[in-house]
Image 1: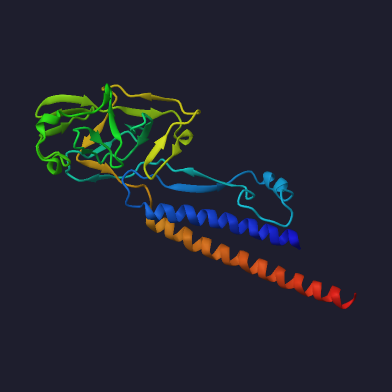
Image 2: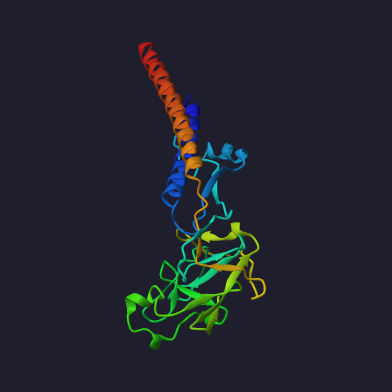
Length: 261
């Protein structure tokens, strides 16, 4: 009977994990370049050992469950902002770098020009070009609020990622393609970092295909996520009923045992 309680609790922990993942997907449905997460159950044969992990106690690490990122492409959303860039290659990423020199990969191409004339991502990271961080001539800017939108420059980004300011070639975007996206580790909504298992290469100018004035929207389908949430609620309620029934049966068994002692 205790085994049935433990099994039901493990099932409810699975549903809780799925609910957290779905809630996070829905919260980021409007986040540029966000990739939804989904959940799958690992090999159930591993569950047998979990029953002997801590007897009578269900822990978060016990359920045979895991999650992975769905890297399917989001739609191209037109913005007409000259600092917004969309990558046509669904497997390619922009490369950014933080102040500590750590590089990231992202699909979020909503960039802005900072007061130091550097091109930055929406999270404040430096946007990398093929020869290092992209930086415009700071002497051009006289009003920082206008420079953030690029209004003081005639900025043009070609299909192969070359950036021109007033017809002057500033830099070329660095576009990177990992061999296996599942080896990437998510560090924030749209930012990923390479792991020890990640092999990747940078595209040449001839291989790059980007579109200025567009952004890649999230690949989250709100309707599908809502349907899954309703199904999870029903499964969670079924687990609650199993626990309630077994608890009631156990309580009666204990009462009968006391009567005969």
